Length: 388
Image 1 (cartoon, rainbow, N blue to C red):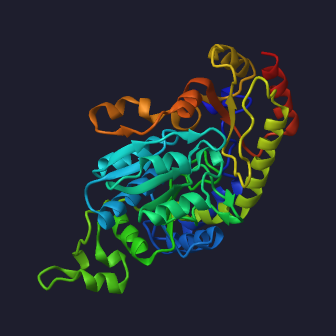
Image 2 (cartoon, rainbow, N blue to C red):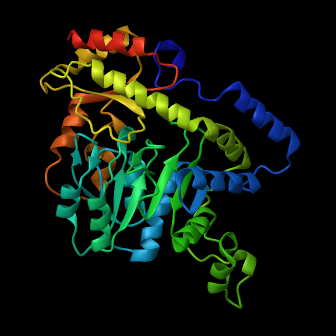
């Protein structure tokens, strides 16, 4: 159903009139709308904001997932395992499968909803090639121990920050702490480019590979040095394909919207953080889990996980529906990805138990967090939920 049936939707209208006017001005004044100078301008602005050397804009966050695992294949070989979280998004796992790797699920820490040093360490073996760490719902999931563990075992560390724009660890923004990271600018996220995503890195080789994978694998999309590396006398230099790439380019229109939205992103993050603070302070801690690690968070949505696993989920949903509050069961990505039917045809592993992931799946949901919410709205809903 449409957003207007909710008094409290998942997201407010995050494309402003001024954004539409900027798009209109660009459309009326430009003759180029495919990937071009505006995309490069947005990539540079995003790199500066995030604190990385390189960014590559793509069509969406899922494209970023696919390109990062394709880069793992290019750098680490065509077979092996990639450690993944059960709590995340389907493309965190499908990208692993579709680039020829075996996903290895390990459990999350309930306080961050991200995989932990302990669960990652248990899963590492001689076949492990990379780690995908998702900053679920905007909580920071990375730390020095995880970073060092990846380096110790020569593993590529990938951060999925699609729900965590601006989250921080030790005053550095997540996405700048690993070998490469993924962002999404989908309509419901912290900022939007309609559809759109970004791959970020400080590594020159990864950057050049990302540029080629984004555009069919063509070397003309990469640096002069990369172009010369793959040159062959019997192949047209304009159509030299170095890697089995995709067409995952974005457009100038998406980049223009990103450029006008980026300056207000920090204010949006501050408001979302405050909303989470009010939410957690006003929920009954005997009824709901509130002991999240909120240090450096950039909250994507307001999590609701009930402490009593024997509760009837319908009781919670009934209150939300009566109050016309939009929600999603299972929290990020619908809950535990290891329980999804798409995996039934593919080989995968589970190391240890997935107790926390299953608990979130069966006893949790999230509701929207956006800049139009007031403290009073949040407190009033908490009062009603606390009466269960």
